[in-house]
Image (cartoon, rainbow, N blue to C red):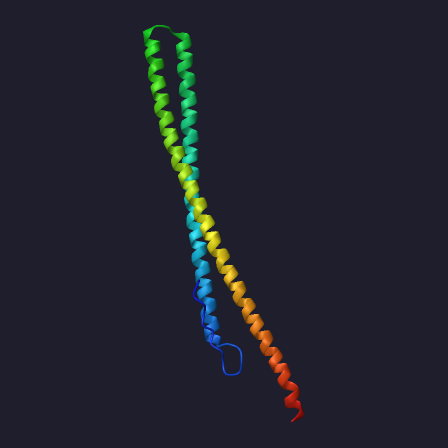
Length: 159
């Protein structure tokens, strides 16, 4: 977007139609690629939501296991129960580690998607600003040509 378009002036004022059409098509093509990039980044955001859902399911499993083992410990006594409690605690610890890993991956995916969206938004804003500046320049040129043409008309009418 940093290269300025070459819009050559035509013989009777204005710009060559083909140059203007080519430039507009180039801008439309860039706009389509920005939209595709935004859609791809939105899909990666959906992946992080799936990871969060999996994390929630693991947490629910953890709570269920903890409840089951607590009830078992309340009903029974002895070493068998203590072994079961120890085993359940090891399962809980493993589930916590797994959940922490999933949460970290989800946070990374969300952060990456957000950064990509901000980057794409910045690119789209930059393109918009560039187009606005070019339109202002074209409008200024048209206004200037209109004034010059208006200045020439009274001279032509007198002849």
